[in-house]
Length: 227
Image 1 (tube, rainbow, N blue to C red):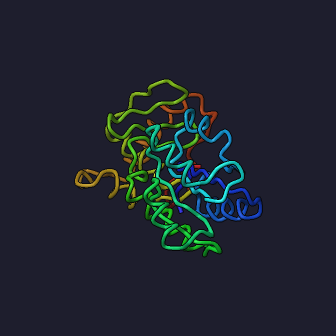
Image 2: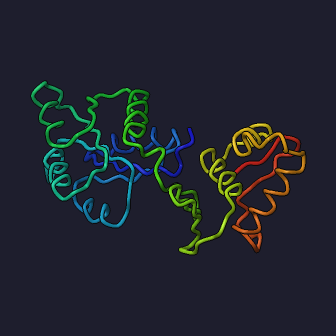
């Protein structure tokens, strides 16, 4: 999976279940942050912009769906999946009415959890969000800007497409033919063997002028990898 820039919040009071959910989400490539209660979650949401929340309904300090309902009243639109033993028809209806987007009953199947998370992220448009983050690189897709440490870095359209392609496929070796088709597309007729090398070198100088961050790893005879 290529989901490193997507953060998911889990609110679950049973530590072993929380660790299990985090393990499977991280294994699928997501970033996670766990809470054992609703305490401090609102403050976190004011400071951060996670992509999705997984919420148990039986929490020690609040009822999960009531907490989500309150978040909705405050204007939070973050997608929510309830993960709970409350699985009667009445409970399901109540959860959806209060602002839930999906429901998984305990005990849960880890594969189903990941599939439902990915499906909800697709439906909510999170995966194609206007902003994509990797390490300290933040790409704004709508205005085609790159920001590093609050500083805007000017990129050409070609450089932007190239970097966006790598961020969508982090830690994956991208072959030259893939990059040619994905980045140059219809312009690939004028593509030469050294075109990728020249563009990569130009991009690297712009985003890492001192060569200290080593964003890219060349894979000899194959292509490049964003690390």
